[in-house]
Image: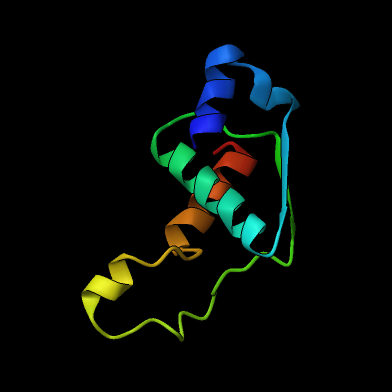
Length: 90
């Protein structure tokens, strides 16, 4: 997040030339970064290339207590909706 924000401070339009790429946990890091940037209403990269991102779409391994659930970083429905909104510009 710090590196991304530094890049935005240096050149606010850098996202128009940026494509993020990550595999496995690197893909999850990009997804989480994009989610954070959308929530903060910051610009996001032009695109993402994710190779087998390490995300849990089934939510099957979430423990039952609410504290564990809140501390997990997962591909959430809200992230999917935010990404759709960014991609389709709606």
